[in-house]
Image (cartoon, rainbow, N blue to C red; front, side, top):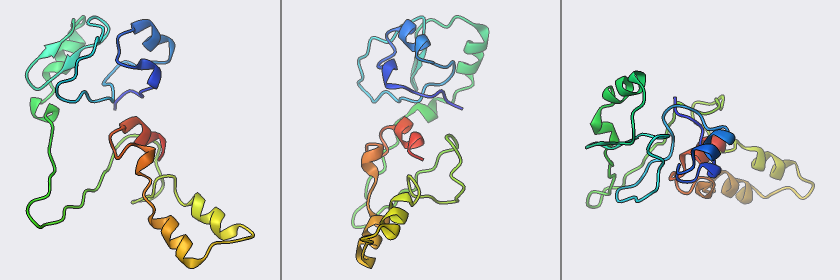
Length: 152
């Protein structure tokens, strides 16, 4: 399980801010893209890459946990179209609140229910468009993992 991320944590440079805003011990959700330059506090946080460990490891338990990480899971995976074939991706997570559904639409169908029950209603086409509408803006096209979890 990874720790919840809050915008106040920014780039993990300020340990006091991290702790005073409910920062949790453990794996942090943000992923640093290749080439990132950030002033991450070297004693408060340990950063793992597929090639190296950065920061001061202050406990044997942390060192043991680091040694268990497979470097292959820290590498960027590129999913790109191959020729004229379309690729469909399915995003799943084992974290966050349970939705109660095997496959769910972010935020459920509250917007569709409201549209159907409003006095003006919505035409069948409007309801279908609402069901199919992209909600990628809620999580920046799956780039903001915390927002993805927070929005269901």
